[in-house]
Image (cartoon, rainbow, N blue to C red; front, side, top):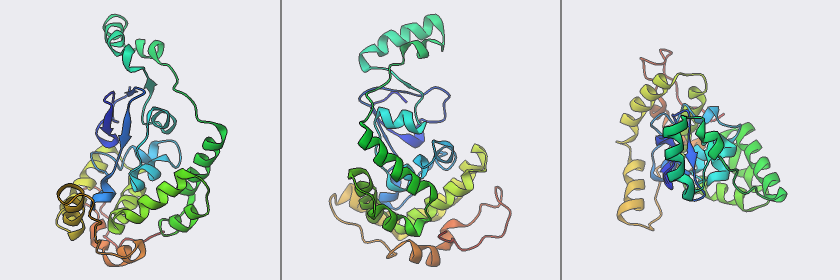
Length: 242
């Protein structure tokens, strides 16, 4: 996880995860009608409370400080020190990471308090109530999160939230299997085609999602959340927005 721009779900499963002052990590899939995959229903529920749901639902991009605070990263090493780190690892082993770690600049107290309030909302608030709860918070962070939720596919938000809840008590193997089964449904849905078209083909075009909001998506598109029988043998039920 030392690349400057990386999908958070593709590089977080290692035990030691290094970021630099130029790193940026994100899981932006809900903006294209998909959901964070590659085990991304497993590690977000195990991050610092609130962070996993915030990142998975909004697709927010985090820099080194956020990566360390959330638990996405374990070490911060300035980019100019990376070559020395490689030599130190070859010479001294994995313990060289602790010696090379330099804490990034910390946010001011106002920013930190605002982030804490927002993460509390993502920890405790049902999906259908996230938007009104965020609208009550001051600051750029909650405003950006609110805008991201409003821009995302409602069906993707429902699917992602469902996967994160199940992933909290599941193994990585089971999460991967469930994500694969879910992806087979999602890739043939209109929202995925619409999201990719607007993001990659007709850039700047606002997607027209199938559902008006997450309540409608949960009621109408429960089929997206069918349990993969090899993982969860309970009868499949329509998705519910808690």
